[in-house]
Length: 67
Image (spheres, rainbow, N blue to C red):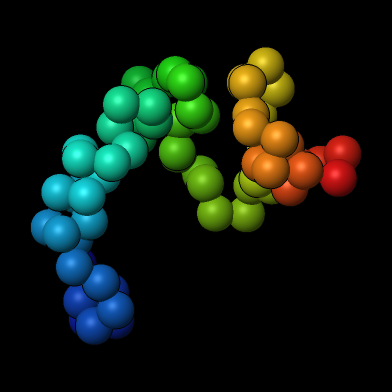
């Protein structure tokens, strides 16, 4: 892990939070697929609500490419 990443985050805490709050709907890593929510690989730079075929909430859909 780079020194800069160590200063701005806590990977262990992030992993714990992901398992508790995100994993039921999202996957990440090799072989990740869309579930209730989209897989989270290559998340940064992707427009919110932009993965075709997912049942986004109205607020999330408003953030999407057609907004």
